[in-house]
Length: 402
Image (cartoon, rainbow, N blue to C red; front, top):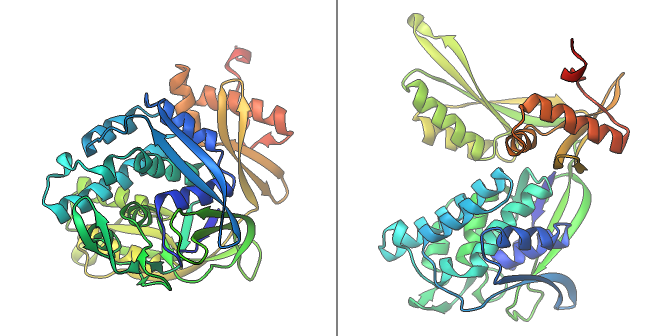
């Protein structure tokens, strides 16, 4: 699923989370995740609101006592959250970016960053909630408009600061920004951290078949609609089933296998469609590795820069590569072993088939002390009975083997 975020009146954690809830994220999923960290006294509510005659969804977060927490304490809380691992990793990534920015701005060690903006319950809920929302709605690409930051000054517990606030400005480095049509703080540090963690490209609305629209509402009165809109759909090309992508590649002979593996993992986390390595022989018979990254046309320039930064290579080849895609979707299905996500696809000459997501099969197998292939077989059998769609691969039933 591809998504486009309109940041013309800025972005904050509550506005983006509200847009995801408005687009289909169950707010109970967020509340349950928060409660799983032992924070049952935090109450998360999705509330209908109207801003400048536009109906949207707002998010309120309350906590009795509202204790201050440092970055280390938030890390420990997130590590106990009962959420899909990708959502946990992305929430930790976002909070890490926010803590690092505040550390640089205020000259405090990252582990000791301890103040309202990062310690408040709403920041914890916003970062985890957005990570969950992107995961649950299967948003793999998030394109955004230029980010409106506002103007003037804002009063914080660090004093009166210029807009964008120093941490916000640091987090927005490399992104297109505009002042916006009104003053005040339009983009918060949390909002900027979420953009740094999740935005895969910037510009106009990408071609898509629109499926859902979510509108999140902020609390400030701007004299105009204080909302951000999220458009969700499938990427659209001129020829249905075909997509223009880019293969980025470079030859690497100066990194150890361990260093190259770390670089590949970081490129995967940065939003690439795929990353792989191929042994090659360069000039003078020198053994080398061809590092290849698959990217969308929107993310290719940014990922090419990231390859250079991660590997120190002196050049990256950018090769247009149109590809043929089958009709596919992702659905979450309740099974006898718990909820799991399944990819369904229509294969020419075969019909519709399904396959369990490997991450979910691994997670469920570990929780039930089962082999992964056994868990996958049972999950796909349950899903086939529930949907009438047969599994892509027929797995042997060990109970029927002699």
